[in-house]
Image 1 (tube, rainbow, N blue to C red):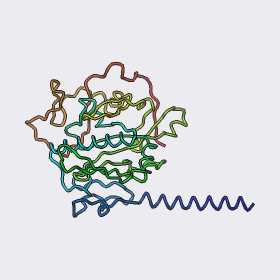
Image 2: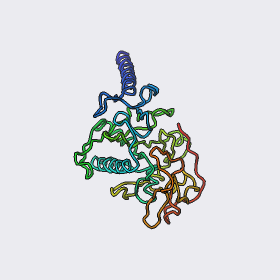
Image 3: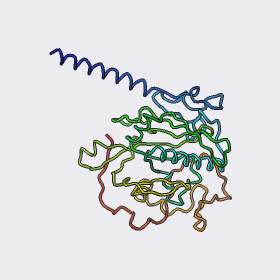
Image 4: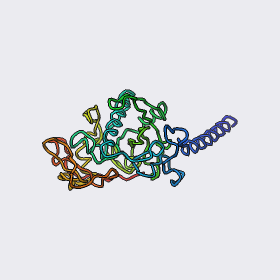
Length: 312
């Protein structure tokens, strides 16, 4: 009787401690003063955001971290810094041994010409929740210094993980981004979202069902095994069924467009070229990203009925 009582008492204490720890960690925040580098004022939207939100985008653009930036970059400057951003991220994950892959608009850039879409202003990648769990244990808030050809003094990049990345259950609309790789000079960042088992769908008999907190749903065969490729002259991985995933997310109608957001596809140079007659701006958020006009033979998923995957 005494042993059983002690067991339940220790279990209750553990649950209370876990609850307190979870509350403290989820509400933790790497505020401006703890990470500031050169700015004297915080330009993040923290003051206007709900207190439950972890990452705070800048007040002047949603694809900049206001703790490190106070303005948008020009069209040309942004592209060069985004290239360095994704290269350093991929180099770091390769060195650590953390498997990651391109997704969403960044995957579309890869699909066209293995480069970032010139009007894009952020990078999207994924990894498994287990991989991010490992990184959270050893690399959260780590700063990596890289010497870059066009930046003689080098540059610092911070890998910051949302403490609520492992949260399961109802989707948290305020914390759909699980981690970020942040340029501490320009404020540009890479959004990292994690893929995890969709337990509800699996309980319904859908084998290999996966989901992200941003409500994207996949099957294991959509993503794995990952394919090796190159992106911005750097080794990278992409989902196995990349063509099908892009069509599913953005519709067939976008597959044939060769003019988009003041750019035209040049089939000779294999590049998106600005249309000079139309002024460019740097705050574009693509609504219908671009795809190639044709699929690579043998890569398309067969057209067949597909189970509907619903969030837990």
